Amino acid sequence: MRMKVDSDELAARAAKGDGAAFRALLEQYYDVVFRLSLRFCGTREDAEDVTQEICMGLARKIHSYRGEAKFSTWLYRVVVNHVRDHWRKQSAHDRARQIYGEVSAMQREEDSERAKELRWLYECLKEVGDELRETAVLVLAEGLNHAEAAKVLEIKESTVSWRMHELRKKLKIMAREEV
Image (tube, rainbow, N blue to C red; front, side, top):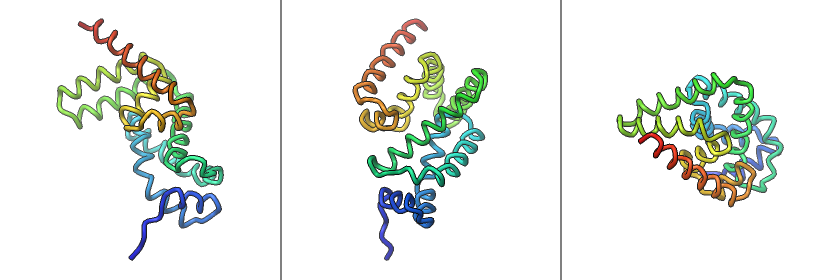
């Protein structure tokens, strides 16, 4: 019987050059990286490219894993940083296309009423800025708690709470303006 090895232990071994541990980590977290990339990028094609870039880059970055945070938190940080770099390389037009692509994908997966709500939410998220959008994706879409999101974004937990409060205020104002 084979015992499941903790991802933090695998990461520590991979950081020391254990190739089998690195492969096991990739197998364990590939879907997580892809899902998060898709949520940030909006299109399957871009998410596939970003995921592949991240996975290839992990071979170089894994040596910087020190075990000070859970591996999953460290990996979220890597993904967020890579996506930020990806966004910087794209024009505002490309970003709008990506967000529209994500909304389109969500529409196919959800019923029509839910799709309308998601479309409205994503349209609003385009207006609130990168910081609030990043925080919203991690907390609302990924289900991270404020402490986990704070670690990923390298900010204080209170800042995540404040951002979510600000997001709620802005969404209420936007909803009132549409009536």
